[in-house]
Length: 474
Image: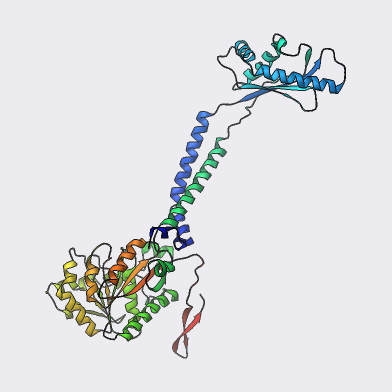
């Protein structure tokens, strides 16, 4: 896996990108709000109104011939000279002097109405009276400046200038500010989507086999633990177990598919029956996978022992709803304070044998390396058809790594879009370098837009008093 992999389509998962955008909508909202306020403040502070006043004059020579073409040609020659004069310092200084202002007003435009001998003079200023007066100053001074113009030009007023009541550049801070907020929101949304795409986590099934170069042992699709709002508030369901009546068939099938692959390995090597399940980080669902795989074996009539070897943060006790006061901790046995018969408890409801911890411990690495742990695993291996061991996350502590040489098989639970690929790769390498056989990764909590399941889902029906599997597409 190289740095160039960051730009491959393996990182593209539309669901993850949309989810990231939805989760971070508050950031988009804040950025848009800041842009709106900043733009509004800027516009209000820097707004300078611009008023204009316009007058139209008829330009004719003193000795008019009455021919329209001749008058039009004459007006064209006048407008050119007039414009040059307006651009000169002579007229500018005269306007400033007559209007009693410290600097030149907004400006003036002189143009010829096309096809006619009509000249339009438009004056602009930040004050409507200033714009109105500017035209009067220009026309009153043209006689004085006539040597610079055509001396026989006559200007007859066709439309007198008026005092403007509204500025030409009406301020619309609300619309402009909302537009700025929209642009900011769009840019921030694109940035979030790009960062989501560039984040090198395991987002798709193909990443495990193609990028991480290991076996995809199974995919467990997302399952809603509490399906109603009331259940979410009350946290009615404590754990996702395949024995629960509200669990979907898709979730049960995904667990059963993993169990079938483990059975296949066991059939090839009947004396090897100890399976270790770990993860890279916390909250990836390794304990849920471990207990459900064990339940799937028990459903098939196998004797299964589940060892909660996550002594730092044990979870199976709570998941199986076992009262803490009834638990004899595994650590007590490893310390020589009790025997296996006191630690091992049978759950009649699920037909599982459990070795649990009720509280967390620190400095547990020595327990993993101890001869007592090796003896515990060996005894359980002889007593049961399958031994499932739940361990701490590999990236946080070395407990799981210490157990690798004491088990037969190991698996890594990888939650979708959670752990970085480089961290997953390190854990896979560690597992491959151990004496245990690395079976592959289990992609957990998988979600995708328009999810197309590879396997058919099945429902259970009762026919003639017997349960049968009815296959179909969900």
